Image 1 (tube, rainbow, N blue to C red):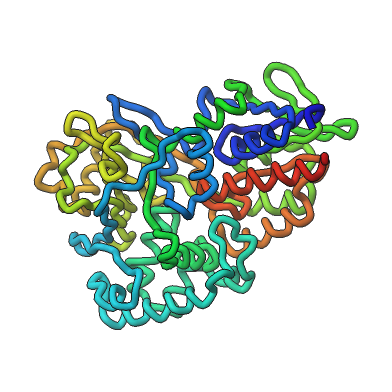
Image 2: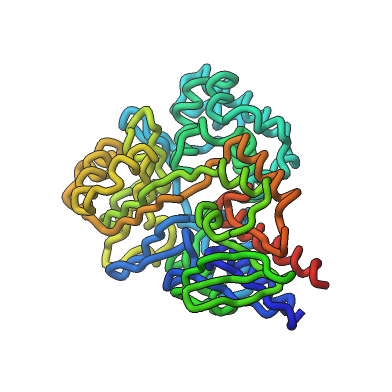
Length: 445
């Protein structure tokens, strides 16, 4: 395999995972990245000595098995969130702590009316029925019947509108940045099922120093050519030509690990299944807005805070990063990361940062009771805009991905990887990168 040259275009987590696995198989791998750093949407920027995660914000112990194994192999420290960290949902300005792992906890969940609690418990029992049949990190494996209706419509019509307003929609809004009507029941069911699987000891985890630690360690292992713009990827004489700003190179196979919109521009030859998939692909946009806060702002150990759209149309949630690890604190200060609903992100996209901080802070104070009495200590810190933050996994789109992976993946030795291929979040993208590397290994064995 050492005689086979493979190009990986994009040093996000999917591309780095693929390159790392190909290297272990013995291939000659070249990784191209247009930016000056690796990670893509799994990146960290350090400002004033504090890490600020620009996109992906956390991992989950045990459930993120591949990324956790990479951390162990590469010597990257993997830590559990600070003991006692609590997620909350804000309703009427009041925080309600989330603990819904069992029937007793669900029936005593005062965020919801009693009738809504009962409906929610029945819904969770239905989700549990699919045990072993759902995979959040590879939605292609899930029953196609769950792609017939959106998560939003299902919860509103078959569960309870309160459950939609204060559970389903807020989760999707903070994790995917869009509303629950734009994600399939398949995706939401599979995540909820994972949360209910107590055997996984579902607990948020981090790498001290930020989410960019694992991508940086992978990049050091595989070597990355930074600052190179790729112009096109196309078959040529039985191999694949990559044209870039510094010339052109020929490879035996190419993995395109960019966002779907960038992939569409790069590929000069597209199969019908690929054309259909890319034409239907839509992304949610958002902004990650950071505020510097006193490390003791949340005395109750509040961690991730969900803000339903019915409560606030700007802020979808905020994260108290002091709960990540002690590395998130410096001189008594830490960072609160605020996420915006997609509608708000689009509305304020071109707003200057100074004005944006003022707008977001005003809305934040309406839904963060802890900050209301200490508003002067909440200061502007950093901001990142993401035009292509998360793919929208509608049922119809997920079906087109299935068709492409079956009929178009690997055509002319060109492979695609990324979360938009029914592989949500960083773990899903990394797993697809590894699967694709192994498939190429089989192809050339």
